[in-house]
Amino acid sequence: MTSAFDWKGRVGDVWAEEWPRTDRSFAGLAVQLDAAILAVAPVAGKAYDIGCGAGATSIALATARPRLAVTGIDLSATLVAIAAERAKRLANADFRVADAGDLPPASADLLVSRHGVMFFDDPVAGFSALRRATRGGGSLVFSCFRPRENNEWSLVIDAAVENDNFPATGYVPGPYSLADPGFTADILHRAGWRDARPQAIDFTYVGGGGDDPVADALSFFSRIGSAARVLAEAPPDRRDRIRARLRAALAGHVHDGAVTFAAGAWIWTATAGGEEPA
Image (cartoon, rainbow, N blue to C red; front, side, top):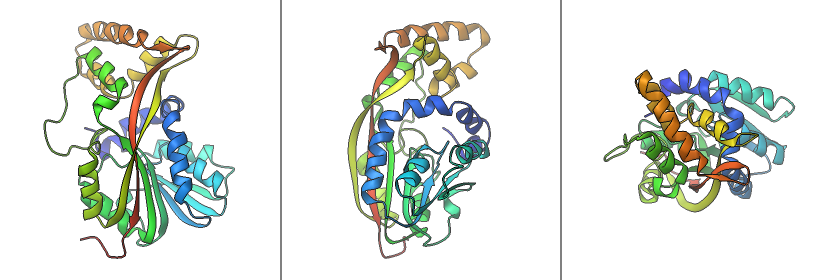
């Protein structure tokens, strides 16, 4: 489980260091998410990118809608600094260290997020806060992972490092917290969002590339995700064996000069209802 405290510190710092590789891993998703966002994005007005990370989604939206003011927010000051530097030539994009629950009421025409809304401690409260920040009739577009069985990269890596630390039942903040579309639809309805619709998409998750894609992928997964946690918690005498198993697993997924896996996500769209959420 990743907490808000983690994103403000250690985890946020690692993701900031790894942003080129994380953007690469999500490139196939980003194309489809950006298209879904542009399908509902107003020409002008105000948009927020929730959990903006290093700014890729904000930058794509601000570039395509030059009259739309786009603000990316994230708990990590390190990620926000990188996003601001990347977008410094875009007059209509800015970035702030902020919590999604603190957005001004009825200030947004559009809310977007690439995998940034899966970590609310209380998802109904979190999405209710987003609803309050959105004008009636405004839009929400976000992506989240489909179940683990639709994400080959997760299955392969967890098996290689013998990770079996999965939530038994109930909601736990994390990568698969919104994987069940029925559960997510109910949350959105209770939070005051209407006409919520999920679109199942498939994409290629790129874990490694370059001259030695296996070494690149091993380095990446040793810093990001479940393998990083297992390695950090393992006794020193076990780490080399875990890395060896992980390297062998990654070597089995080299395709056209890159380490790639099948991956699946939901892209959700919803409309802010006229009434305030309970």
